[in-house]
Structures are given as structure tokens and as C-alpha cells.
Length: 424
Image 1: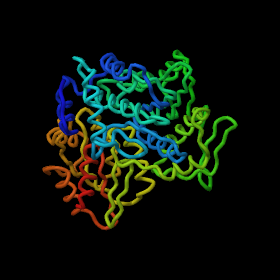
Image 2: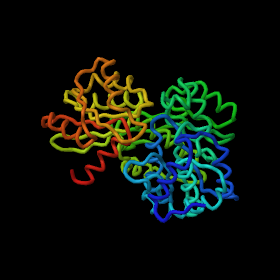
Image 3: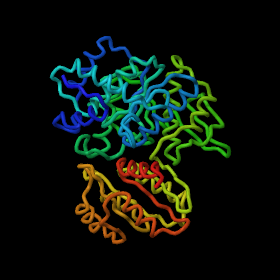
Image 4: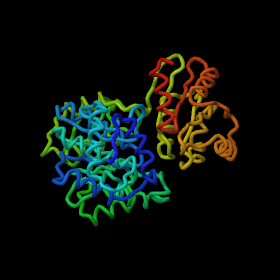
């Protein structure tokens, strides 16, 4: 049995203790969970999966339930600045001490079962939440759904925000294949809420096979924008005069609508009034998603890293920053569809600045030069030591009123927010 007296020590060991960074499958993690929590005591649970929008949905749930006065636990990934962000109770990251204690308990029952970094974190969150006297826990799927560690917990409501192409090496190359994996979080007789306006057939098929209570945006529930605010509806139910979501972008109406549908389905066990929904929509926060840092030269941050997310980003830029020169500070992981992201984004970008990352999964400058060249994009600058260097050069090229756009990776947005937090 190993032991560390700091969170940093635990995390450093976990990063190197398992042979695979991503190791999908439930057998190992379920075995340890059973030993850790033999009675499987858990709060009410909402599990959220999806290609994009998972984090937004969790943030809406958290804001609305907290506005109602409930005690809420939220498990999300990845983090942006500190690991503790992954495990929150009542909107606040839990302490190093709580996480270290959970890791100790996991280690004490793990025996010889090998766990990945993500599996350790998932078990820690579940252990902490089981002891925290919560009214509800919100669990964001890390990758896929069917074989993701989060899926060891039986949800009381399952939500899928959207289906797009990402993580093809693990989930498949089509929306149908990916939909099959995401639908793994569905359960018999449990509400399955889908916020994708065109859900893959596989998603509907799995819901039918599992006899889940399936609710789809545009069919079983929806929203309409009005002159003043917007309204949500499902059958005869309507909630009118809703405020614009604090998270920006047209897609946030879809995310918020799916969340309200899920809350409605749980209302017999956890009632929520309309005012708490309004308050939650107004107060919701989520760093790195269309996050605007205003100034003479404003900075927009977005963690979007796949074609679907970037199409949404282009739509947002076109609507909200028309005729502005956009200088993109950019980086991505090498396993992403970089070429397609560049193809979608380039028409709205004035010039590009490649910011290399230290992460071993990140695309190298050599690879990026090749992809930019293949796409016929010449207005790109290379040769920077990292984010700070690339950002400084981009800012020198910008005029008052221009926009600096930082996007393409959680790690890049993390570097940016860390610098702004340091007052640079």
C-alpha cells in the first residue's frame, strides 16, 4: 500500500502507476467501488454525457439546485487551474485534505487492482460525496459513457447534451457509433434526456432496448425565444419569462432546456420552483466557455477542441464580434481533427499564433506547420516558447478594438487563465 502526505504526491504517482492513460472498462473500477462502498450508498444522481455541452449542463444543474437551497456535489473533468475543481460541494472545490483522505481509503481496499488517473479521481469523488450529506450528485462522464468509470453508478436521470465526432480512436468514427457509446448511461425506467436536436438512431435504439424513458429536444420538450426572454415547454407545461443564460451562445438554450427537462423529471423527489430556475440561469458560471476578458483589446477564451464545438464558436464570433479582426492563439492535442478545425475557423481568423504545450499529447510545432500548410493557411506565426510568448506577440499585432481568441485545448486555456490570475 502506498501513501503520500500531499495531493501533488498522490497525483504524480497516479499519472505513472497505470500502463494506459485512457483505459475504458468498468470491471476494475467497479470492483474497487464495491469494496469502498459495499452498501452502494449514494445521493440522488444525475449522470451527464455528450461530445460538447457536458460541463455547461452540470453547471446549470449546480446553479439551479443550489439556488433552491439544496446541497450539491459536482464531479467534472478536466480541471483548468487546480485538480480540486473536479470535485465540488456547494460550488466550492473540496480541500486537498478531503481528496487525500479519499485516496487513502481507495488505496486501502484496492488490493492489486490497477487504476487509471481518471478512475482514482472518480472513486475519490464518489467516496467524498457519499460522506457529505448531499441532496444530489452531478457526475460528468469523462469519455464516452458505456465504459466510462462514472457509469458504475446507477443514475436517477441520464442526460446527453450532444453527439459529435471526437475521440474516434475509442468511440468510433461516426455519430451512430459514438451515440451507441454515449447511450451506455441509459437505464431501464430511468429518464433519458437528450439535448441534441438530431439524435443518432443508435441513441434512440438503445433507449428503446433498455426501456429507458426517452425525452428528446424538439419532440418531447423544447424552447422558444420571445421578445422578452424565452420559454421552456414540455407538453402542457410551460415556464415563461426565463432570462438569457449567463453562459453565452445559441447552443446554451439547448443545454438549459435539457437541464430543465431533467429537473422536471426529478421534481417529485427534489422539487424546484421557477424562481430558482431563473436565478440559476442568471448566475451560472463556467470558466473557459466563451469567457470574455474585456479591455481595449478583449480576450475570448474557449476550450472547444473538435469540429462541432468550433462550428458553434464560429457562429458565436460571427454574431457577437462582426467586422472585428480576430487574432487566434491556438494549440490542440495531436489526436484531434486539427485539419477540420482549421478549415472551419480560418475564414473568421485574421492571423494565427501557435502556442506549444508541454503536454505529451499536444501537437508539436512540426506537425502543426504541416497541417497549416496542407490547409493552405499562410497567416500563421511559429517559433514561440509557450503561451506567454505567443500571446505577447499576438497582442503586439492587435489594435484597439481587435479580439484575441485563445482556443483549442483545456490546457491552453489553463495557461491563459493562470497568467491572468498572476496579473500579467
